[in-house]
Length: 270
Ligand SMILES: C[S@@+](CC[C@H](N)C(=O)[O-])C[C@H]1O[C@@H](n2cnc3c(N)ncnc32)[C@H](O)[C@@H]1O
Image (cartoon, protein in one colour):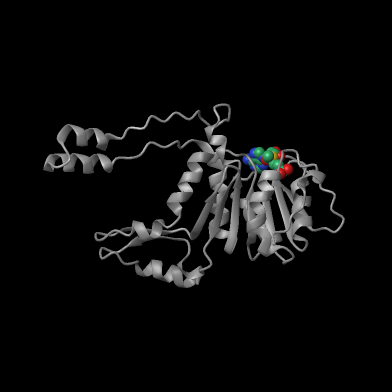
């Protein structure tokens, strides 16, 4: 059964109840284990105390651009000051606190798409353990007009193939061709801020299988994302457990095979 602690007693500033409920089922198998957790954006540090008490045996690390002091007599919490988009700092934190990588990374930081994606791609590819979990909070800020990189949602659906089918008639060759061309057109989608970033993650999931061209070379991508779960509070991204097919961004030969240097890099990663 999933462990539950009421976040109310921790002085966490925003109402975390909904978030905590979302986390519980993913975190249940990790309770009591010697895991390492990194949270980006910690405000007063209350969420770090919550995670310390929730996991019990974990190394808890937090990062914030403002100075934060956390009362932690047992020394399980480690706090750094700096920006989530500073990848050199992220590398240093990993070296000092979790040289084998983190099991869990939580981004509750700037909620600005361009900063969140810098830390995501760097940490997910280099410093999240295989099978690890990366959670991104408050991704719907991208729908807010008042948010620095958000924008009010205004989508006007244009189902052009329906119109073309009406004009040309479904059965005619021209009609079928027009329909095919317009079906192939893009579907309107809100891509601002964190919403755009969350949708970018969908491209990263399973893209590898689809991006292999039939012939003529090209690129092969496998970012090692096996699952994405999204609800109104959170995006959960699960990393593949398979080290050797992970995180490939490689040029293909004309026959659609991986180049020898790509194969070498896969062998090195394995
Ligand atoms: C929503 S609060 C974090 C709340 C905390 N996780 C909790 O649950 O109590 C966001 C924090 O991110 C910090 N922050 C904002 N932009 C940042 C950035 N680019 N890099 C690092 N910290 C940032 C702010 O100083 C703020 O303390």
